[in-house]
Amino acid sequence: MEGAINTIAKIVETKDPYTSGHQQRVSKLAETIARKMKLPQEKIEGIRISSLVHDVGKISVPAEILNKPIKLTEIEFNLIKDHSQAGYDILKSIKFPWPIEKIVLQHHERLDGSGYPRGLKGEDIIIEARIIGVADVVEAMSSHRPYRPALGVDAALEEISKNKGILYDPEAVDICIKLVREKGFEF
Image (spheres, rainbow, N blue to C red):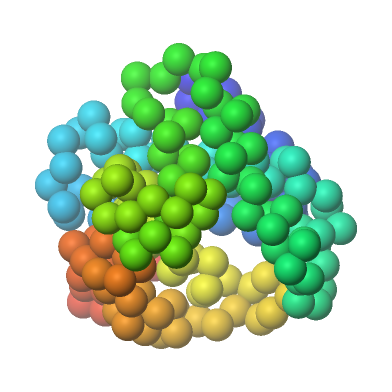
């Protein structure tokens, strides 16, 4: 299974080389957050595996949109937002011991209902997706994208801190900030 998961991750990176290593870095941070939250080992492993494939749905997005060096149009951004649903559709027929497809579907949902694809709120978003959502934002903001330079880890931590309990899970945010600021976590 580990080999299959890594192959899926590499397929996404082949299509979107600018984010090469993103899923692995998100997995490292999300797994560390989950451990510090003292979640059961079974959930931690589900978070690790899910985050390794959380962007698999980007395979459905045209490469010229993924690699566009300027701001996306609303239509293009909506195509990118479809990647969560596409990832769910790709993974739902695979029998995992964890709710991988559900985690992938929900990783862009936000506590206040402003996320996508379903606009879920609060506890309707499973904890695994809430943790990956925090790790995903921090890694993405800290890294270069075709349409913008890296914003840096300080900007990423400011974003999650400012929106703690509004967009992002408060416990995951607190632990993430502590990991980076006090424990020296690095991707």
